[in-house]
Length: 112
Length: 122
Image (cartoon, each protein chain N blue to C red):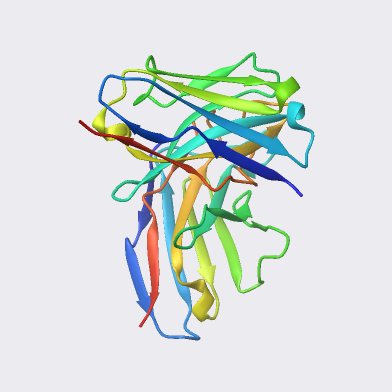
C-alpha cells in the first residue's frame, strides 16, 4: 500500500491552523472492526518517531488536544488547531492494515 | 518503563553482512510483535520487517526480501536483523519498534528505540 502525503512542507505562523493530508493507494478500513488502520507520527531532529494518533482519530495519551486526526477509507488528515513552536517537526502517516506497514514520505512543518 | 535499545550498527563494505540487535525491557517482550524501520536523510521512514510475538511469522519489504532475515530470542528479550549482501542504499538509521500484542500486525508502533546507524561504503 502506497501512502502519499501533501504538502511536502508547510510554513505557518504561530497560532495558525496546520493541515496535513495523507492518501492511501487502497482502503485501510477494516470492516470487521470498523476501524481505519492509519497512524500519525511526529519526528523531531535527532529523535525517533513518536506516535501521535492511531486508528485515524485516536489521540495517544499525553498528546495535546490541539492535534486531531480525521478521515476514513483512503483519505486522512492531521490537523494542528493552533501551531506552537514545539510543533516544528516532520509528520508521517502510516498504514498498518497490511502486515507490510508503509509510511508516507513525510511533511516538514516549520514556523514562518 | 518500556525501552528498546538497538546495537550492532557500523561501517561495512558493499556485499558484506551485519547483524543488528534490539533488546527490550519494561514490558512483556514475548507478547509483542517487533518491527525494524529504517530512515535515510533523503527517503524518510521505510518499514523493513516484522516478526510475530512467537517468532513464527515474519514479513519483509520488497527492497530487503531475500537479503535480510529477522529473528528473536524471547528468553533474551532480544530481536535481531541479519543483513546480508548489503548495498549502498541500505545506509540508514535502523530503528526497532514495538507492534501488536499477540499478533503479527494490526497495530501501530507505540514505542521506538533510538536507532543504530548502518553505513555501507566502499
